[in-house]
Image (cartoon, rainbow, N blue to C red; front, side):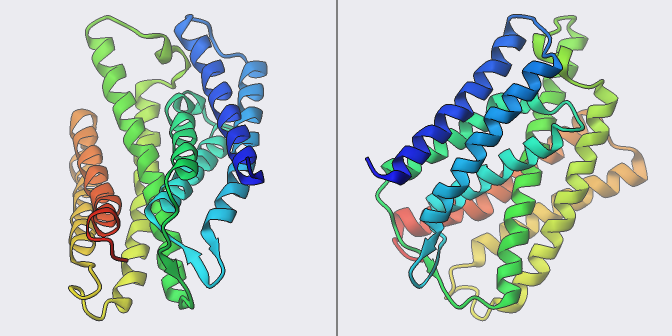
Length: 271
C-alpha cells in the first residue's frame, strides 16, 4: 500500500466517522450539542486535509494538471466539503455532512480503484485558469444549494403531513432555509456567469474542441437560474417553484460538465 493509499484510506475513515456521528444523533432523535458538532467538524477537517494531499498527487502531473473525470469529481467533492465545514461555523449546516462527507469518501474510493487516465492541461492561460476555478466554485455552491432545496422540499412536505423527522430539529426554520438557499444560488449564479464569460474567449472551434454540449447545457442552466432569480425579485417566487428551478438548473449543469466529460473520456476516449 502506497503513501497515497494510506492518506486516502485515513481520509475516508475520518469522513465516514464524522457523518455517522451526526447521523446517529439525528436518527436517535437526539440534538447535536456544541461539543458533538465541534468533534464532528474536526473529524471532517482531518478528512478534508488528508483529501487535499491525495488530490494534489492526482492532479499534479509532470507536464501540467491532470483534469480527468475522476480527479475533477474528487476536487468538486473536496470543495463542497470545505464550503460545508466553513459554513457550519456560523450556520447549522452540519446535517448536510450526512450526504456530502460520504460522497467525498466515495470519490476517494473511486480515485484509488479506477485506473488513472491522463487528461493533461498544460500551459494554461490565466483566463482559462480563472474559467476552471470559477466553474468548480459555481458547481460546488450550486450543488449545496440543490441539496438545500431537497431538504427544504422534504421538510415542507413533512410539516404539511404532520410527520416531522429528526433532521428537522437541527435545521433552521423553513423561511431561514429559503433565504439561505437563495443566497447560495445568487453566489453560485454569479460565479457561473463569470465562468461563462471567462470561457467563451477560448472557444475557437466549438465542434472540433468537443464543447458544444457543455456550452449549450451550461448556458441553459444559466438561463434557468436567471429566470428563478428574476422570478424571485419580480414575483416573490418561493417554495416549490424555487425548488423545481434549483434542481432543474443543477441537473442541467451537472450534465453539462460531468455528463459530457464522461462521454468524451469513457465512451469516445478523447480529451
